[in-house]
Length: 169
Image (tube, rainbow, N blue to C red; front, top):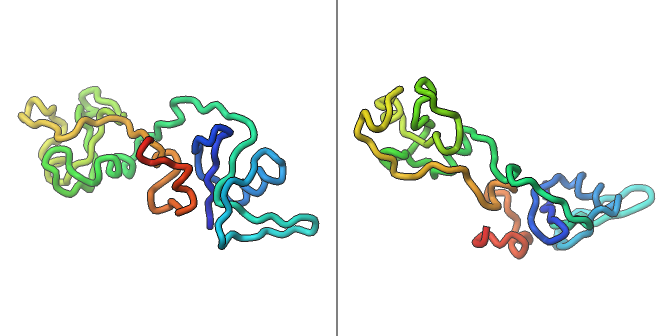
């Protein structure tokens, strides 16, 4: 176990923290253990032994600003949001494209960046969709939901599922 799920006082998932950070929160009594796996590690010091939980909950509520839920735009993030599918043809995408090119005043924002295959990215160049007669297969928008805050699905541990409610995110 390398990461621990950190919950707000209201049991809302906040983020993943390192084992070291989770243990410090427990020692400082700023958090309490919520779920401990059978194969949990025990950390020892000369004066204390702590079983490292897989889920900890803060004792006090932490207000999370809304903008903290939207990650910064990145190539990896755009490809993940669009499931590595080209917004123009639906084939495998390995590049990103600005719908309104930056040379024409487009921004580098979630609503203006899509995943694209190399062919369509090259063919489009710095032209607008209207000039080519193309349409987007998806509506680009900022990603939302829990997985964007805590990481990828590959990092999820079985003991976290009761606290994540992935379908409701």
